[in-house]
Each structure stands twice: as structure tokens, then as C-alpha cells.
Amino acid sequence: MAFDFWRRYLDGIPEYLARHYWWAYLSPRGVWFFDHAPIINLILFGQYRAILNEVMHRYATRESPRTLQLTCAYGALTPTLALSANTRELHVTDVAGIQLSSAESKLQAISRSAKLARMNAESLAYASDSFDSVIIFFLLHELPGAARERTLNEAIRVLKPGGHLLIAEYGENRGIHWLHRCTPWRGFQEKIEPFLRDFWHSNLAEQIAGHAIRQGKPLQAMAEVSLFDGFYRVLEYRV
Image (cartoon, rainbow, N blue to C red; front, side, top):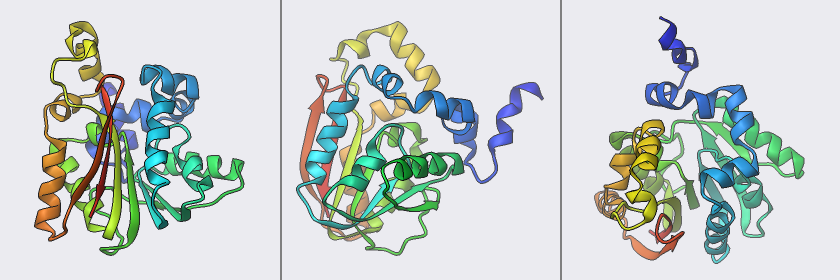
């Protein structure tokens, strides 16, 4: 049927991604449009550079022989990681080939390389204890609850003892920020981001701690940095 055109993107792609996000992450026109700095900054209310800088500031405090960027991200994250003096070996995964191609183009533009692999973040092919750093940049709020749990579990599984987990995301919706209280905007945002409402009201720190406990890995919360009055946050952990 005509309204099922998103099914054309299902080749190796989770149904929730194809159904709800084809326009942003799988369509060539969408990828071209959204991967521009002014668009990214508009979506993030002018906070993109502050969020990226906070992630990189915390990343720079640790040696990282092997770094995993868990799924591609629009903007400058991949080339910035590739250029970082801390990065020795950068791995970038994504379930969508078009996203990996975009990341490769960015790396070629700065004469850098990374090991790109098409994988679902919910089930990584890497061995346990493979990476010194794992970075997740605005992915978790786009996942259904069960997929989010599997992704967090995998992120902790592939971290070496002493490894470093960095997450950039929305903050919890405590009804304090003016954007949370703006009903028209919130309704629109939750319409185009169908899993955001659940994410806003979940306890991400408890979920991460639970997966670490189940895997027998000690977890130390290093920092939770609020940005834009708590609307965004950067979380830092060591396992």
C-alpha cells in the first residue's frame, strides 16, 4: 500500500527505524539535508557545539587505544574523534549503510580513516572487553525501550575493565525546563520522535548500573553534566 513505502528501506534495517525514521536517516535526501551544521544546530537549539565540546573534553582526559563510536551521528563527531590526539584506532558502527558512507566521506575530507562496520547496536559482533572507550551520541532516545536496554548492555559488554563510556542525550523530563512545559512543541517533538516520551521519563543511570551489575562489571559514575538548563546532558562512566 502507498503508506507502507517505508518498507523499501527494510533491507537489514530494524522495522522501528525504517518505519519511524526513514525520512531522517535512510532517505538520501534526508541524509543530505540533516547533515548540515545549521540544521543540526537548529534542531539542538543552538547547543550542538557545546554538547560536542563537552564530550570531547571528557574524552580527552583518557588514553583510548581503541574507541567505538556506537552508530554514526550527524555533524562533526566522527571527524573530531578521528583527529583527536587520544584516538589510536577508531571504530564506527551503524546499521544503515548510507550512514556509514556519509561517515567515510567526512573522514576522507580530512585525510583520516576509521574501521567502519555495518552492525546493529543491539547485537554487536565484537568480543567482550574490546574497547577502551565507547561513545553514544543522541541514539538512545530514538530506540524503543527493549532495544535501548539491549544497546546499553552491548555497550558495557564490549568495554574493557577500566573502560570509558560517554553518552550525550536529552535530560530527563522533570517538567522544569520551559520546553517541557510548552505543550505544542512537546507534542510535535513526541510525534516525530515516537520513543522520546518513554526515554524522557526513564532513569537512564539506573538502567546503565543494572546492566553493569548483571555483567559483573564495577561501574563508577564520573560525571553528569547538564547543558541548556538540563534539557541536554553528557554522562561519563568508567567500568
